[in-house]
Each structure stands twice: as structure tokens, then as C-alpha cells.
Length: 257
Image 1 (cartoon, one colour):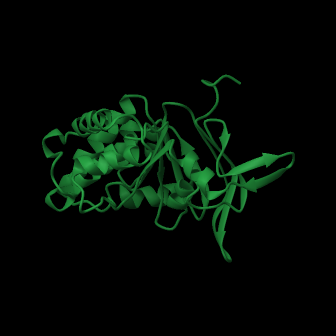
Image 2 (tube, rainbow, N blue to C red):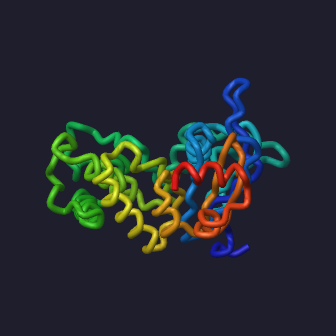
């Protein structure tokens, strides 16, 4: 199979439980290169857990997950699968950018220093090249004039845009967004969504857990509705939002649209 035809993400019968609480029940999904998949559904439906399984922040109990053709978090020898050493998993995770609800910026570092931190720790390029790239990324998210601001002096929307620039600094092949606008005041949501739209237009492969149905309709290639740890319905965003086939999807959308 050629690199172009290999899905960027392939999940096969993914299951995850915390004790007797089964959070994911045999989830199978694919995301092709350059595509945007939006996950929607009620709280507790397993969306964020699934996202965290993709970069092995959560271990899975059953199934297989591949990113760019590589098994995530595990090595296969014959018929047996072994969990990777945490250092190996962390190295694999570098190729996957993740943006959380909370910005998790270092308060004692400027926007520029936050973006430069991971490439600096990994000694990627010279200090001058790292700084130039970080400034370019801050410009890309509309914050060129805030590079020397500390997080406390930035709005929530600005902090989240710094967090996106920080994730991009590692040149990921895949970006995961876990409800990136849910902690923001309503008037700040748009500026973050605009940055995400720009990323999608540039060809970045993205999986987005979101409650922003307008964004999902406009940007996603595929919309997946999850509930109770299963995929209830998936398809073209406009089709799913305007003509849902499942009663559970209809009930959910009637409350959020």
C-alpha cells in the first residue's frame, strides 16, 4: 500500500474500560491524509478518551490503532502485541500534536518561549532557527505582536492560539483537538476556530472533539456522532446534521442546533 493510500489514522475495534465502566466499545474509524474528522456527542460518550488513545495518553484494552501506518503504543511480534517502553511511546507522540481544553502554558515563560520549549529540549536546529520558526508560527496564529507577552497578559483565546502554535512547533503529521474552545468566553471562540480553519485549508490532518456544529459543518470531511462509547452515526457533516438517520442522533441534534 502506498504512503498516500495509507490512512493517517486507523482505529480497529478499540475498547477501553475503567474497571467495570466500558468507555469505548469496539470503535473502528479511519481518517485519510489531509482530512478533518469532527467527533460530536454528549459528555461522557467517549470522545475525549478516544482522542487520548490515539497518542497513547490512554492505553487501550482491545483493538489496534495505527497512525501513518505505525502501530501506536505497541510493538507486534508474530501474533503477540507488547506495550512500548514509555520513552518509545513519547518519541512516537512527537509526531502527533494535541491541543487541550485548558491551555497548559508555562506561566513564567513568554508566548515565544512556550512555543520554543519542546524544540529546544529536543535540540532541533539552532537557537536562531528555533526562534525564527516560533515567531513564524505565532504570526500564523495571529500573535506576532504578542510574542513577548506572558500567559497572564493574554486572553483565553490568545493563550489557546499560543497552545496551537506550540503543538505545531514539533511539525506534527496529525493534530488532535480536545474541545479547544469549550473553556473560552463566547466572543473568543471565533478567533481560535479561524486558526483551525486555516490549518485545515493548509492540508493538516485533524481530529476535533467539538460542540461547535457550525465549524463541523463547514470544515469537517466526516462528522462522527458518538454516544455511550459507540459510533452511532457517521458521514458527510451536512447530511448528518440536516438528515440524521438514527433516533439518538436526532434527539441529540435537536438539543444543540
